[in-house]
Image (cartoon, rainbow, N blue to C red):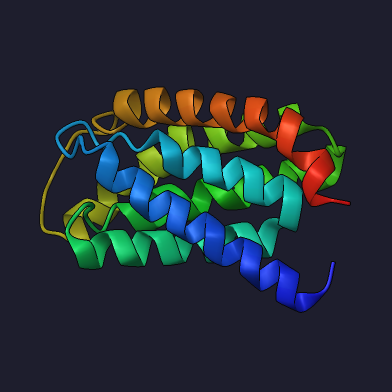
Length: 157
């Protein structure tokens, strides 16, 4: 895939991730399943580095538009990294889904506790973020998996 096509696809996925978070606001529960859908799709279609880059840009734009907090950065980027890493290792879409759920639902939720305390000045218990991160990542990753069944053959042509 040439660089122009790669950057164009990344920009489209950033737009989908930002618009999806505006259309599905639930700040109280911190649930943005579209972010996880995008993470899985970009990890499979474009690779780990692109997935992390797209997650960073979505987090930045969501933060700047007020549709997310600083927790959007580790939540999206760690999940994207794990999704891309497991997909690259096993070359199966289901491993991208597993990586997203483990990366966001478990690792990011635990990382968010000290992150929110030291960066945001908000203190929470060790498992405070896990339920909402887990529900959001499972739902979004499964949506991404289903969409990839139709989209992946067309994009890789």
